[in-house]
Image (cartoon, rainbow, N blue to C red; front, side):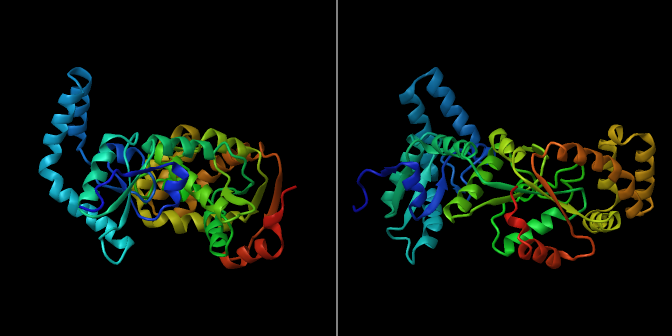
Length: 354
């Protein structure tokens, strides 16, 4: 039968450039912890099966573990073959001979077994040498590379994220730290957002974004001025240190504009989640401001609630901003999003670095 020779194992850079569906054959919990962005999880073993096979390998022996694995996978081979055909088919008009890229943890028996099955049904599998472990090594190396970073700063409510995304639509290289983390970066930042990725997967997403901009020849990359922690996700230390040394373009808007922006974002969420988020920072707000904010939320007086908390957030931001090595202010008061974007683009502010 054609396609029954040994599977091709590729080094990471070649594997990256190879066309074909990307399949992660590790267990569901391994995949949730972190995976190559864009990969599809077709687990060879369930979490329980993986644990049992691993324990057998350690306590009994290799042959017994392999036998146990075969018994677990055997009844699922037909289903797994069907799934492989489905994920491979979009890469070609026909699934016959379609390429499929496969990886497991170390590029060992799990990915090799699925590659054998893929060959058996007429696909053209390639394996990642070293598996996901090699990919993770590449991810961490990206953060130690020198990047020409620029930061967009501004107090809470200045619309930094919206402005960054608008710049991105105009062709500016942007990494949306908050968007990738599914968190706006404050006690209220997770409200109305999808579940956050693990820090491991957040790192994977960041590395892929940086690599995308490098591959497309970006002269500089814009990010939002953030603390190291974005919800439960943590910006890698090596990248965060480069952010600390990057120039900051600080957006200035009036207090009224900032309050209006915050009301637009958070008022639709309703009182209960806002009250809970306020109570989480009550010790930092102090009893007077906490009561004022909670009473205002109860009365649906969103502007007063925002005003009560902004003093605390402004002090936190100003403390962080004081560490900036290079900073320049730009007054965008009274300008809408598109007007603000044009100011930055047309006045050459995005090229400022000194």
